[in-house]
Image (cartoon, rainbow, N blue to C red):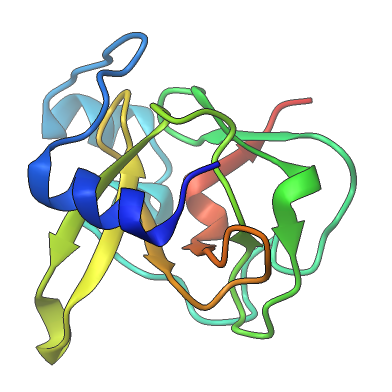
Length: 147
């Protein structure tokens, strides 16, 4: 189980190696993705709270990266955080997520990206439920339900 201490360590000292890498130019991503998905995942945007398709859906299944289809989260780790974005307590596997210290918007947070293709997913916070205490706050448009 990943803890907040692990998240901070990854963000500062380096992330685990992904199982595979998908690398494309911005032009290739822009051509392959819907414009709004490109804005969220490649230009590090954020969707409006409570606007995403997966915000209030809790069906069983696996959520993958909308860009490269790498499996990222299991619905068993999804919970209602009340924040307006899909929230998870853990990634599917330890090396699925890339953690980056983010100093944007006048605050310090930990950005989470797909470790396979570097797509921006959202942020992780230490205010989730037990046992991990983590809340991965993820943009719906950065995800694709695959199973």
